[in-house]
Image (cartoon, rainbow, N blue to C red; front, side):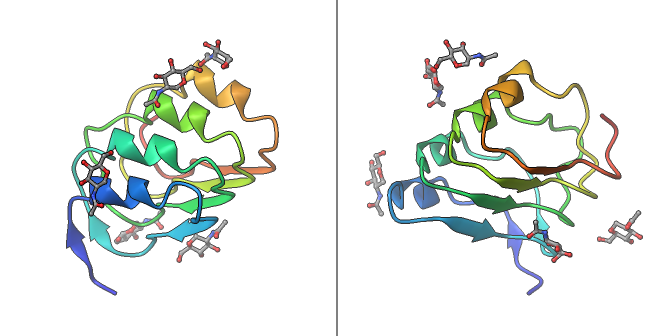
Length: 101
Ligand SMILES: *[C@@H]1O[C@H](CO)[C@@H](O)[C@H](O)[C@H]1NC(C)=O
Ligand SMILES: *[C@@H]1O[C@H](CO)[C@@H](O)[C@H](O)[C@H]1NC(C)=O
Ligand SMILES: *[C@@H]1O[C@H](CO)[C@@H](O)[C@H](O)[C@H]1NC(C)=O
Ligand SMILES: *[C@@H]1O[C@H](CO)[C@@H](O)[C@H](O)[C@H]1NC(C)=O
Ligand SMILES: *[C@@H]1O[C@H](CO)[C@@H](O)[C@H](O)[C@H]1NC(C)=O
């Protein structure tokens, strides 16, 4: 949709309701807001094809305990896969292709 800018932290207020969040294929950049850690029923989180260059995979993603599919591909993310991701016991798909991890 060619949306751009930073992701609104207020999305975190959809804490119980939101089950799928697909922001893929836009031009979002900047920090992925920690408020999204409150999306505790989120099963699908797709941030692929944005531009989070110089940013790391946020540790708090490990708090999204309902996650089944996490797609971070093609974002120029750097750093490490945080250990917290090992807490995601329902995770079936993790796609980190095309980053600098
Ligand atoms: C979202 O929640 C925060 C507290 O986490 C609150 O300060 C803010 O006003 C809320 N925003 C909306 C649009 O409800
Ligand atoms: C994420 O988005 C990409 C690009 O829109 C799409 O190709 C892919 O299938 C999606 N992956 C998931 C798990 O939804
Ligand atoms: C993530 O969960 C831990 C406890 O498991 C908590 O201490 C931390 O504040 C949470 N982080 C966020 C951003 O909610
Ligand atoms: C990643 O996305 C950019 C544009 O968003 C594109 O130019 C590039 O070819 C993509 N890279 C891969 C490996 O898909
Ligand atoms: C995994 O979750 C447990 C329980 O909430 C927490 O104590 C621990 O710090 C988490 N581990 C990581 C690596 O985040």
